[in-house]
Length: 627
Image 1: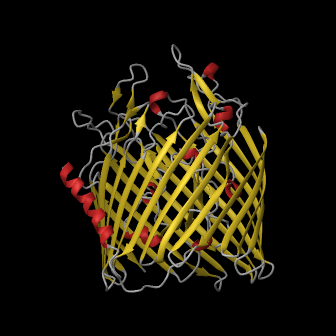
Image 2: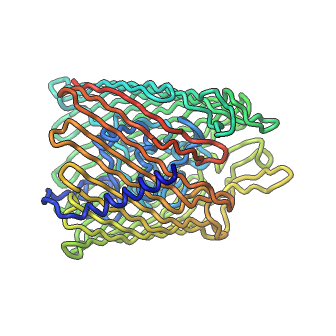
Image 3: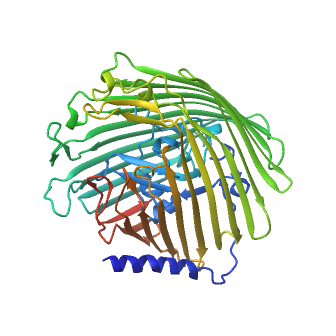
């Protein structure tokens, strides 16, 4: 099997090299992105490294979960404990999930009750998603705390448009049963647009303790029902009110450990999780140059118990955010975006006599314009946190087209991460005197810099992109375990400077008008303040993807391959792994589509968390109809 895998991966390299043969000229692509500045801006004017995943990409590759959409990107990994629904760890550029912010329709879905304030994306389904922008590097100026390694900006499908509907069903390995329903349109003579979506999935994965030499037979049930909606009411010619709603109700059974003997147990543990999101958003246009927005959002994460530690453990988090923004466009490429924000986070946990609250007030400004040949972005922000006071951050980026072939981008700034409510107030019997939190914590501060070059005469035919980045973090917040006999500890600021440096490169090519290929590579060097390698952070990432669309549009085929290597945990190197997946879709009629797919088709057996195996080979088949 190893020889087959090596040959397959070598073949993917060869396909990419063949892509540089001459091809017919295609229309140049200059995509519009929002995540970098908050204002729609051509990607050719941005000094940051940005990837875009569209609804078309998600459909062609038959991607169900957010983590699967992100896995093949430069500098990004997602490690999940065991099977579907297990605790997940999103990592970017050698930093952990608490250093990456994830937004859904403008709402930060970081969990206010998560130990270090990260977003849990393992339950996030994608059928209602229109677009995902992934911006690497710090952007605390626009997005505040935690936006250090990068930003993932998710936009759901818009409300309104021609009345339409969609239904799809899928079945497959591990007793997979999946269904999605969606409808959208307009009423009230077009004044009110709507979009409604319902997604359901039920799967029973093998035990995460199902090693090749063990006998854990009980499946791990996972269920997820996600409902979402969007509404747009046109109040007048210059003002629109928008409402976004999303609710995720999931249940995941997992294997666990006996709390007394710590022996592996093949049985019911797990948890039930609910996430509710709502955002009211009003946008107005005072003139062609001056626009404004006002929004209020709420996010709640609620969990039942983890059985292996007893029925009394529960922790919930809530966040409310109010924001006002205004933008003024003073030239075709120049604008100023300013805003103010108030955020309140609450932690509800057993052991706390009352909910604990952390509040933040912020103001920011982002300026963008062309200066000579340089498209330049400058931003500043000030946050005032209820616990540690004021903090300033800044960002500067520029892009210049050196000649017809070469473009260069530069980006630098300061990102920060404020302590999470749990790091400040959290309680647990395993901590010092039952107190895990530390109200004397200071925010992490990360200096970041990046230089990148893009080589292309037409990005729709071929493009080579390479970047070098550096992140240096002071006051990194870590759990300080004091060791035996109690092993009790709490959260502390680490002494010294942790670092993460690396090179990211990608090659895209259109072999023909119907076949495209892309190869990504990342070489990372994440280090703790003492110089040792960060736990579980891979140092080498490879991914390759090929997409084929038949000339008549009836057939779509995608093939993807991914290799993760050089991972360490407590100084010990972890196993490398290589996976391959595919998807194929055929349009039977104008509104009817049949699709099949497979993941980890070589049945690679590997672990991303110690002692917990990941999903093995799976296949699925489904059908969708639009009307």
